[in-house]
Length: 337
Image (cartoon, rainbow, N blue to C red; front, side, top):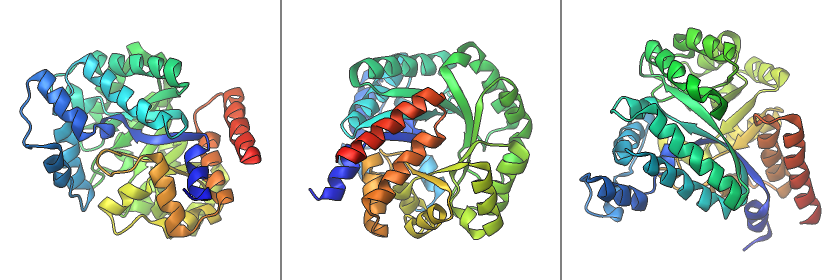
């Protein structure tokens, strides 16, 4: 193992753009299907992996939602989350802000409580077993109605203390941020933190990022690499101290590459870019692999890698003392490496 590989593997890391449903590895999917009496359209794990042949966002989403069919009981969501935490504990991930998509489950008859109680229990156990601190971000599906998002926000009220923020994901085409202006305003009034997806190379990408800033008032942007096409937008992102949660490996599956050059360009402009894994069971590679892929393609040194890692803790939705503690751990590692 080279020095930089060791550095990337060992440095304490935070992940801010991770779909827990996107960590459903084929092996666990088969296990849950058997448990729940569900027939899958694949004969083997290998055949399932071969089906993960995405070339754009819609083709990925079709497989992503199909995969959720095996998630039915609280124990399924618990096992899903614990599998993720177990894996990333070995990569020295110490903090996670984890997306979940309740509408993708409630729309097929799974209770909101079933989803969140399974995830919450896993969060507690991961904290005890691995020392991983985690928080939940509830995402609305943008290809569903704003009214459905509002209903989901109401369903979450009982669990307000378990959810740190809300986000927006799924198919962006024809579903701009302003479609959800009212529900995000309501979420803000209830004390939620705000983020939104601005996926890579979508129609009106730059305009959507401006909407996130000027209409919605987000605190960070998920993906958002097309911001580099507008220098004024980049300056405004820096001025507001907003971060971008980018995902190199998933970029390579749904666009023409990892966008490593754009990611570095955003970093050079002073934007707080972070590296994350998105849906690592479908875009093979967890956070360590994403950092390594970017490092290799952009020939990053350890100082730049450390900057990416520090950015994640700096824009995480943490209390100041918690943030300081994590950053001190990163600095202690750098100083002792």
